[in-house]
Length: 497
Image (cartoon, rainbow, N blue to C red; front, side):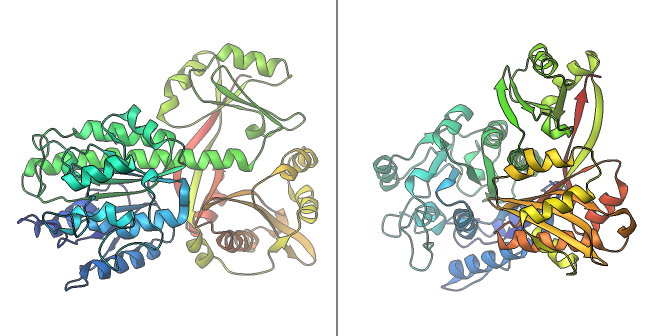
């Protein structure tokens, strides 16, 4: 996940452990364990009576500097989660669930806490009951919270959890079931959820915890089903050298699951943004078919479970089309090999690129590109698109796009010179149908279109952009790279000729 932003928050005063000062170094080391070319934003640790409120404000400001990128918060004590969870709640609303991996419930109030330590009140504060000045404007509802690996509740915490029906789970299937029908999940991971025989570098260890492998499995199960809205890992107090290696493996596994969630989130949006004429779910496939249209995405299958190749072939044979499958990622490696053995050849290897919308706006300049009405833009599309099925694409695909869509075109010398289509969907916008008249290439037309579309997307609340570009298209790849796009993942097609 090369576009990941790491927010390092060395807050430690919320812990009641005598070794709490180690959390400052723990936050630094934890941030350094995040794999890939992540951006790193450091938050200064405030002091004084209002330290927690000041730190929350500092974290909010740091999140703003990440410009919509996926965020990994490296704490510090659990109090560092106030601003990130509140930000996720503002974005997803009632569609958000929070999974609280912790040995403790963090459900005390200032009145019920035996220790008075704020890190034992954080979740209750996010639920609307906490110290003055720290309760978010929009608290979580109890129905949005799942406790994972919790095993040490104070009496008042237990009474609250039972009264509000907060589920406590310790395995992947139960976790996914408890999250239910949420669209997105924020993952909070206090490292004392781990068994101290496996990982002891925490201030308040509790026996009987989870293994790192179990935590990774549970986070991966969430990522398979839900969009991950953010991840926070907290309470690392470096003590045993071997725990650093354990933590590196845990962080790597959690980040990999986070990345896989983003891949699925993009593909779901791309699937909806470019509708096929018909989609049928049969025999382990989503079977897409658009008569008269030659585009791969409009006439290919996507595996969703154990898939029958025979059914795939019969479906497309009855419609006079070659069998074609869109595949991406290690999850489909076995099916990819089976198709290869059956004579399917690789076609159109493609990279999916993502960018911060604000970064693209900053990297592009305004020009003649502007928003058009759909009907007017379709005329430009028919003129500039180089495929033979342009008219049918306009009729059977573009006219049926349900998401908010921005139709952008640019002119040179009174003629259409470039175009792009932008489809916004819950914080993201996809970039489609980018094209430039051949004689206008190299004159900044595509950059103008991209910038105008990014400004439109930002106005729709889309902080991230995605697009697909075939791996052999070096000029397009260079254009998007200059605008701030980086590779998220890739896919290819398998086709039986």
